[in-house]
Every structure is written in structure tokens, then in C-alpha cells.
Image 1 (cartoon, rainbow, N blue to C red):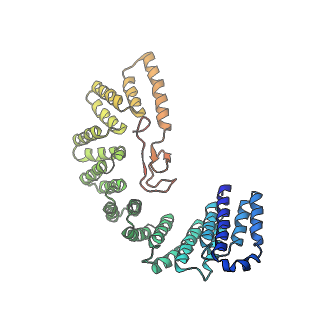
Image 2: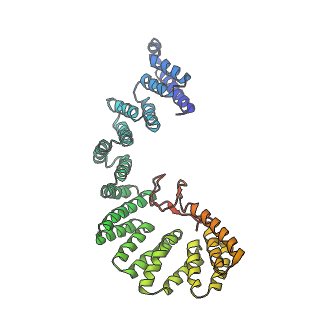
Image 3: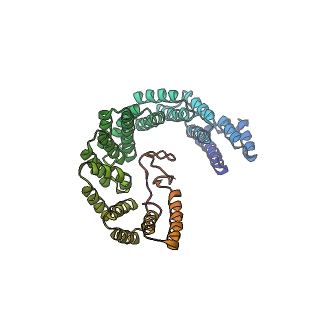
Length: 392
């Protein structure tokens, strides 16, 4: 904790003591006879000596638990948890629960914090029991959504996807936020992947469809459903699922191009595939679309392919595009010109290889592979292909 934070807590405690003294003037003379708690001065001494943790402990001991100091104790317990001193946080919150004078509402607030303490300490069974009991007893309370959210967090951490789906479905009935809807869709996708590994295609496909029923913009569900259909050689249906990605989020078109090309070649040849690429490139150009079209044009007319690539790079420059253009020109070069192009190609290729391909739109995490859940901020469906000069 910063020194500023400690002084704020100290000031709040001092102000509270002053306010309580002003509140009951009739009892003022009686309180004046009482000495200031020794723990209070001990806390000041620790604070002056930069012993922040010891100072907080002393202030906790010096503050009597009542309706006026309840929020301070609750805040101090939260500060312990954020500092990683989980056992101290548990002690503070359990001490609050043991007080008979706290109200039913205050008890629920403490129980929620205690459940968070247990989760931070890895005591998942204790957290689960506490939250399930609260969920049963508080179905119509103001804390019900928070209780369910913590339960979903817990089951997500445990990767208990079936339980997470059950609680998350209940949660979005009460609190249908975009984040929770997206999360539930990905839980269905996680279950679908488990069934896919066991080659239980029907169950896997059902979960992907349930994901789309929850969140129609879930790219992962469409790609997963296409994979299941391709495994069953239902290539026409797989093409429909893959083309749906262009409507859900055009930024993901680059990840479906190889599979879409394969499906088209198995049923209708390449004409439908090229038409799709051309349409999408007119709407939102990307390196993957431009390169796929250039490679197709190369089969019939190398000169036209180069002209097309140069024209596209003028309006949509990318490292991948420049690398491909140099690669095309190297095939017709000889001698020193070819050597120069080879050096340039290697430099651009190395530069393109070390650049991350995907980035989280929430926290900025970047990497070389697509994560449906960001490894950094843990949000679902926020990692996307990077666009611009160094990406698509």
C-alpha cells in the first residue's frame, strides 16, 4: 500500500472518532476520561517508521467494530487481500462475521469478501460452499448477481464448464451484460472442444449452436461448428458457417481463409472462393485477402498479379504484402539484382516473423497465436488479429 493510502485511512479513522464525539455530547465527559487506545499510538509509530503492514494491524486493533467503523474494517480487509496477505484478510472478515451487532445486509457484504479471500487463497471448496449457501438464501437480494458472478469466476478457474454454464445462464437472466453473455458463449465452446476431442460430433455441434444462440457474434462458435462439419465431410455446411464470420467480425477473416479454401476446393472448385475474397477485399482489405488473391492471379498471369499487388499496397501497405511482392520479383531477377532482393526479402521476413500477430483489445497483451481468453486480463473474445502495417 502507498503512504498516501495509509494516510487516507488514518485520516478517515481520525475523522470518524471526531464525528462520534460530536454525535453524543451528553456522553462527552464520560468519554474524555477514557484514554486513547495504546494500539492507536502504536499504529502511528509504525507509520512514521515506514512499517506499513504493522501500522494497518495496529489500526485494525484500535478500531472498535460497530456500525460506524464497519466500512473501515471491510476496507482494511480488502487492502490486506490486494497486498497478498490473505490470512490477515480472512481474519479481519471472520472477525466481522463474529460480531452479533452487524445487520443482515452487512453480513452478506462480509461473506462476499470472505468468499473472495478464500478464492485468492486457493480454498475453492470453502469459497464454493459459502457462495452456494448464499445463493440459496439470497435469491431476491441485491447481492444475488454478485454472488453468481463470483461462482462463475470460481467454476471458470476450475474449468468446470458444465457448472459454469449452469450458473452463468442464471446470471444473465438477472444481469444480461455483454461481458457475461460473451463469457457464457465461450463456456459452451469449451464444452464443445471437449466433445470434439472425443469425436462426439453431435454433442460438440450442439454446444457450438448453443453458443451462437447466446451470442450470435461469437466467431469462435462459427469456426468450431465449421470444424465439426468438415470432420463429417459436410463441406457445404462448413462453408456457410465460415462465411458467417465475415458478418460477425471481418477482422477474423484472415484465420478462416485456409479452411474456407479447402472446403470450396472439395465441393465447387475455386470460383466461389475467389468471389468471396474479392467481395471482402472491397469491403475491408487485409494482407491475408490480398495475398490469397495475388496467389490465385499468379496461376494465370504473373504480370497481372504483380500489378494487383502493387496497387493494393499503395492503399493498404503491409509488411506481408511487401514481402510477397519481393518474392514475386525475385523469380525473374538475375545476378546482383537477385542478391539484393534476397537480402531485402530476408530482412522483411525476419521483421514480419518477430512481430506479434494478435493483440488484446482490452489490455494490450500481444502474442503469436490466437487466444480466445486473454492470458493477461482473462477476458473472453477480446484478442484479435493485428491490423495495419505490421499486421493485416
